[in-house]
Image (cartoon, rainbow, N blue to C red; front, side, top):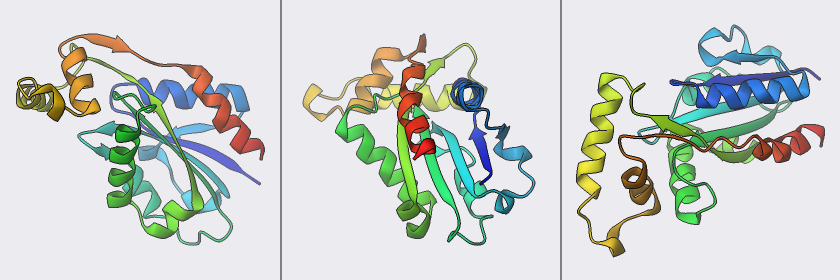
Length: 177
């Protein structure tokens, strides 16, 4: 059964995870923008960077799937907020549910990894979005700040890297299953 790793990465963190998994498993990795025929693969691993709540390229990629009955799907999100906090997982899953059909979600095994951010690398739009977000949450009372809000405040205008390749071990176990 043939495998493919597809990734949606704007600034490179998600791409790093996808390429590391490719190196560890000998599964080819390709950007979602370059995928020609997703239906020719039986096993699809999608790595998507989280940007403003959406998961880059995921909806566009999975909309092209014709027949799910013979597919094994693994979805891996990569974001700034800590995926070990239940509140963050709930928010990520809410975003996935807005982007994908229930049928795809039911068939997929979903993992969450932590990425990073470098404000010096952000484009104009993303930098302004983060500034607006920061300004909207920085003065909230502590009891009203979500885990995501706290992550934005703690990392604002910095370069932070939370990449941890050991998080790929559970994905490799799922591939071998």
